[in-house]
Length: 463
Image (tube, rainbow, N blue to C red):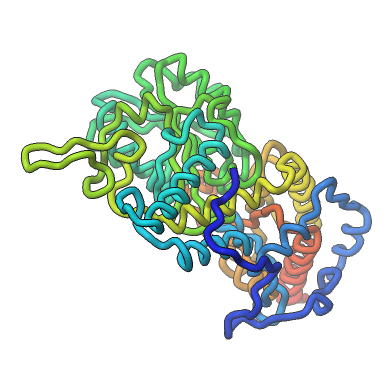
């Protein structure tokens, strides 16, 4: 399904003008290789990178923000697990909506209201297709993954959890997969039960199987970890949970941009993701829920757009999914997310996944050339998330120094404090990749880290 055309726009590979505070540069000013540091060039030469069938330059050409400078250097964006940059196709879809079809939806008889409604519901259908859902009626629009999880907690959770019930949550999870369930468990006198990790940081499958019981009402797990990138066996874990009658909620925020997802194959009861992590706008996301689950859930917010009729004596609510979308939704966000999904699916998803896997492996090998640097977690079965520590330098100091070189990545607890505590840490540096990242990005990261290490060694007594 393609994005509805709202207004003709001239395609372009980059914005015509940059913001006033964003320096521009011509392609010939970009260094072909990263600034040299001892060992980096030899590493690149010894381990050739083929790139496979996917060419990341095709994606880069579409993303204006990647063509700016930061602190006098061409920017390297390695903070994709926090948010992704946007292709001009998505940006122009937002502009087209506001320029030609801005209206409220579902309630107007005029032309622009009909156009906006068509665009909004086309976005719902596109997301259903993207996730492999059986129907667009299984898709609820939300602000993002966090709101989706809170929706499930406040509706399904309030009606289905009671004293003595268990909610299983792996130690690896993002805070958004934990905190809403702590809140509803306290209210309903249920228990949140941590599923431990193996020493290397994967979900302990033997412990998970042992913790499941007929007290288990829900299992919450990420399709890919935001702190280690690891991909647990979601389908197998879901099947095991279903044997005990438990529902399964899958956090797909870190998965959907990297590999195809089929919620029916996974047999997930709920699946959530955020638009801004898949090249779309902020403030928009989607919750998939099996039709039977949605139809049994009560609304969690009240107001306009989610009702059929209102009297002072009673209110009749709209059918799912509309009963969960009170008020005016983020219509432009839906249009933009639809355009972002169309853009992503314009590439060969299998080739993209293979490219990202090769780039992740290249990055792992490259980071090993930095003395003392430790990458957390296993090296296989993961998306391109590399969380690490550097001796003699706090994560925050390392991120700041890398920013001086135009390299953007994340430092902190990554909203996954229990996961970092498993490794005896309260903070770490995280580099996270997307389809538009390149070998040169990794080379520049490694070169900067090597310079940081060498400067630290020079400052030691006798250095």
